Structure formats: structure tokens, C-alpha cells
Image 1 (cartoon, helix red, strand yellow):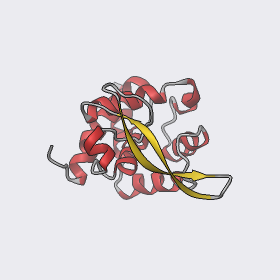
Image 2 (tube, rainbow, N blue to C red; image 1 turned 45 degrees about the vertical axis):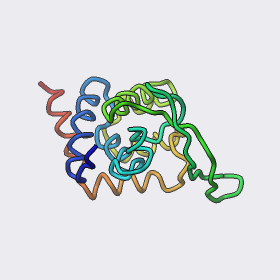
Image 3 (cartoon, rainbow, N blue to C red; image 1 turned 90 degrees about the vertical axis):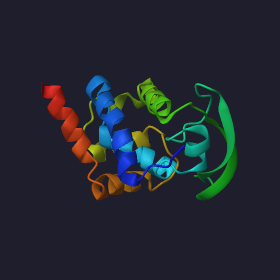
Length: 161
């Protein structure tokens, strides 16, 4: 599989994120930023080998793969490394679809219809999506640096039609 440039990656994930925002009311820019951060632009071992863009643990459409991962340990107030099983997919499209399903669970209900990316980033962190204490800042920085809010605007314009 050919690795995508950053702009190709944004556009590939962005297309699906816009569709999901229109159909399921999930903030497109948040989803794109998560994919960038969690998969290192689709270039992490987890993304390349397992097609997992979001670092979602568990069993995917074709099983799981074991990876060493860095997790924030609040008791120790530092990062620790643990082995964990991560979902495995046939394609990035499957990963994006499963991520959408993951975010539609009751735990993340406050994300539905939240189109302000800063509020969406805070809400997903508060719901326990990520252990990194700087997760919100990293997501917001990516959205602003790469103007990912343009995808939210695109989806909102289509939703008006």
C-alpha cells in the first residue's frame, strides 16, 4: 500500500468524516484530527499493518493485533507502556466506519450535534476517549494548523440543502 501525503490523507479521511457529520452529526474536523494524531498521518505501525486509524482497542472486523502502547497512568502521574490488543481492519474505510459506530455509543452521546471543534475535543476527552492529558490541545492544534474546520463548514452547508 502506498503511503499517502498529508493532504491526500486529510482528503481521504475528510470525505468520510463529512459524510458521517451529515448522517450522524459527528464533528468532521474532530474525526480528521483524531485520525492524524492517532495514526501519525496513516503511517504508524498500527495504521499500516492493522488499518486502525484511531487507536481503538479490542476486536475489529478481521480480528486484532497486539501492540505496545504508551498510556497515561493517573495514579503514577506519568506515561507507562503496556501491551494491548487493537482492532484490525481490511481498510481505512472500515476503520473510519467502526470509529463512527464507536462514537455513537451512549458514552459519547454528548458529541452528537456538537459542531464546535473545541467543545467536541473537550467532550470526547471528558468521556474518556484518550488518556493523554494534552489530548484536547493536540486535537485543537491540528484542526487549526491544517484548517480542518473547512470540512465542518462543508458538511453544514450540505446539511442546509
